[in-house]
Image 1 (cartoon, one colour):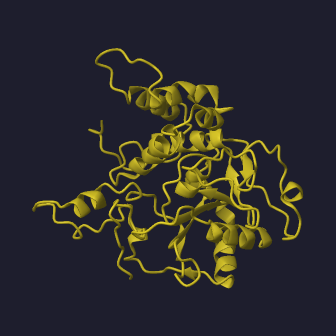
Image 2 (image 1 turned 30 degrees about the vertical axis):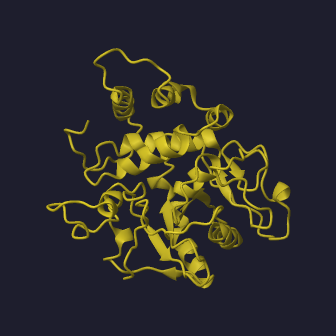
Image 3 (image 1 turned 45 degrees about the horizontal axis):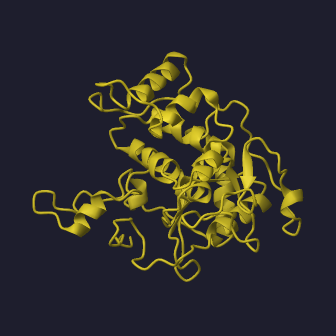
Length: 315
């Protein structure tokens, strides 16, 4: 297994010299292959966050596919030249990408060690399958992960979600390949995507357009996942929290913030306002109380999937 490298900012697996703007060619290639194989798919993870919010330029590419299409997706990608990882000791097979013996916690920590421990893409859910990307083909991105829908966009919180098949004709224009008024998705080439120096969207027209969640629904998905994994003993919730706070909440411009929260579910607006520090909390009230209470209401109303093992002393 190739050793993971850490850059001076502590972002796992990233090269120390970053280009000004990262082309998202592997995501476009994956979407094209899956679309042609008639496997519904949607962009996910930090790359999806960077498309609508702040792009932290992590080198991982994530997609969600329906549960019953994961095998078809695997076969299509293998046929398309992607290398499936079957190494059970791979760092991607652990929720914590930092190996236990890679940092000596008993001695003094240098800057590199502290950045490694604080890397924002350190904690992550284990993908159902993943592929290592060839440096000769993709000079920046290094991992492609696929997640089944029931582990990410489950029906308990989004009953009308359907991952829509796209046109299998690569030559048909995006306007024909996907409806502009779709309630859940938009394309990575959509001119309505907020363009700023800290984000990645919209992506270049010459790239095959990728389906991604509309911003408010991405917020919704991440909040529900944060609630599900709250207090996760493997710290998976920290990954969702960072996507929300560092990718979506901390955008620099008010008009971009309005773009992200437009059409947000009113039920989630108080939580979003709390995360944005828009609501004044009474003295002595923990800022996470509203999240904890919302999570408990989901559990009480049977709107949660099976919960992971949690640390009962969390926060």
